[in-house]
Length: 319
Image (cartoon, rainbow, N blue to C red; front, side):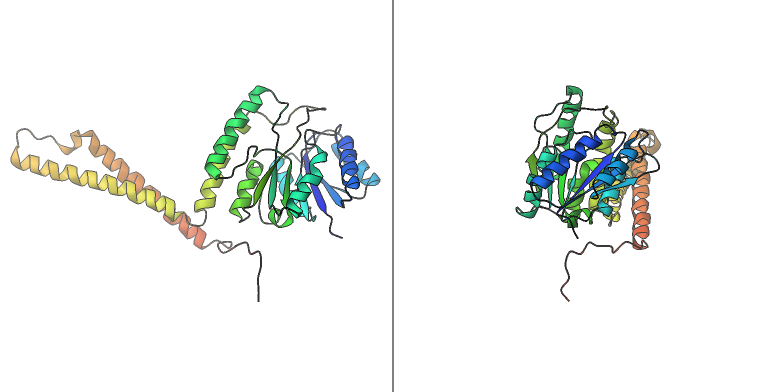
């Protein structure tokens, strides 16, 4: 029987918080008469997390788990959870008790009754140091501007999805920060936001370092580029290459004509073309332009021979 809600929880070394988190989730879903399943994705934990999950399974048959052989990261955990989840609504949350299960009924309602494809939590009031909140605000501002999605907290772990959304996207690398953008790219445009509680961390320490502030913007550039030009690389590389080559060719042509006329009209005062710095810029433009054009051409050949070149997401068929 398909459940009302699937709860996907990626975790790494969170043995202390799991029993309390499970009890809290069960209390909330039981009070709201929601059928449920909880997928704990153990991302190579080195503590007793897996033993705790096995113990919870004995107490509650709705508990399910996946154990990774080593630590792969949050995106891998979410992707695996999405593959296994079968609920009408899929909710993701962190395992550290900073995401409140009390938000589950509200998120479920926004998907089922209000018709949103995806609802992202917004931790309007955060219990984090300024060294984390300030870069996060900057990151969210940049993501809004580049993606066109008006969310205040892209990286909030507490999100709800329509079932079709999680089966239509692939989360890889560190793309968990940009799931709303992945969903928009897949054709799910009704994206909402809900102000949610942010709990102070009760057990353990954060698992994310400062590298997320470096990797995050790079991933954003990558996903924007792939979403726009992934199936038509010649449109960007060919255009840039042609423009640079044309600029270099026109500049070189002008210098050549100017040099010839100078040589013909005033042989005593002409300068060799190779003495002019702009000549070398024109050569550089032509070389780089040629390389970009060839890169686009080769990428286009690879796309045309790819087995997934026509792998399009189809939502409905009338035959």
